[in-house]
Image 1 (cartoon, rainbow, N blue to C red):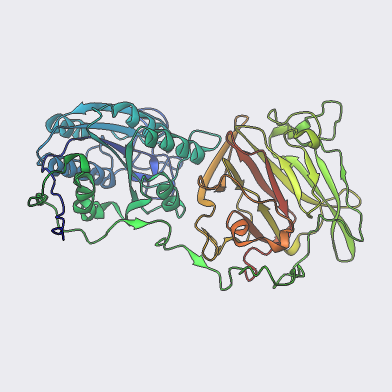
Image 2: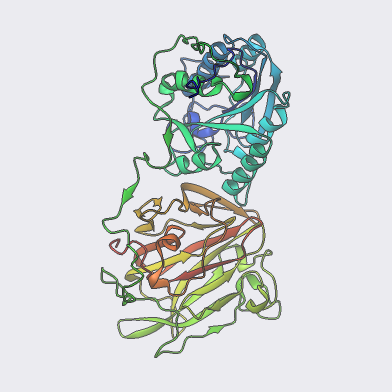
Length: 527
């Protein structure tokens, strides 16, 4: 017989190029909610008290550093560079700063120049543009083919720029970087965004996120992060020998290990029954668990039609800049209609296009045979649509005590946005957050604080983004019998005492249609 094989050992030389992307957005220093911490001028940067741009300044640090939180990011970066530089091998460090935009501060420097660059950073404030941060790091990571390349993205929020579709832009930039064999390692401080862990997990090269709950805890993950960067690759392995022991950094041993998002997200609340799917069961009746007014779009005893179909004023010959779906429900014994119109100024949306739904014209709608409504979305656009319940006389009705509104068939690069005027929501298998149903792997990505910008107008609210891993969704046959996979890519909103609300339908390059309906079997116990 042959002798047992021995595990190969690896050289203690570690060759790598690494880029640190440091978040300077307003949420890092803002102390009274999500503010920008800048008015766009140097004089207005890092305000100590500003009713519009926030309270941001800590007087324990310089104004250039602005706050203790950003100082913690600087210290963490310097500690990492110092520890990594103690390994033998050829290595370089790049620094990118980002907020509303990203800029390369240093490219391929040594330890000393990197520390000087980090100490010399001037906090800017602003919004969050992860896409540019990733792109600038990708530009900087031009090491030799034998080098490992890493990007460490240190941030506390979800992308808000570029518009439209900031999260999809982030995903696209990350995909390009990964295509260049760059290992993306997110370091996420969970302070402002419940949806951030899911976004970070998606852009991470291995799905892991180094997550802490406050800036002061960053030092706790240093050792784990060092071990991930310096793990030997097979190209450095040779005949068996004793594997090197990584030098211990000067920081304490970590008490927090990388987490797989979003399973540890504290805001995730599974519903008591995430709608298990039994292919042998009979179809649901459609009666909600909680008493509510039904909103129906399918065929039945009552005839439903679409009139005008002119959302955004896309038909210049029609002065009625809306679409009306008739007989969608009744309340207090009176039938009502549903009016859809652009929430942009004067009801005009230049991204809507003339033509019919049969030709997939942007902002056109059609009644689907499955009992839902198709809404067609223009490429690289978002359409904020105001939904209003209208009586037979053309007047807005009395607010409905409770009703459901569902959006589904959200895949590829699609997303939708809400003005937040709902009471609660079910997204896949969770309430007030998104998670997969049952054994499904992917769900929508939820951003609890998202702005959309279109036609020069900004809207604040909440956003639901398609999971990048979901490129195809089976055609929905019955909105009240969605499969676990379909439920995981869908949301059911519950509204109370409401007669109008705004939903924005958007996409990057992929996809073209989203669907909506009233009550569906998403989170049947959510009401």
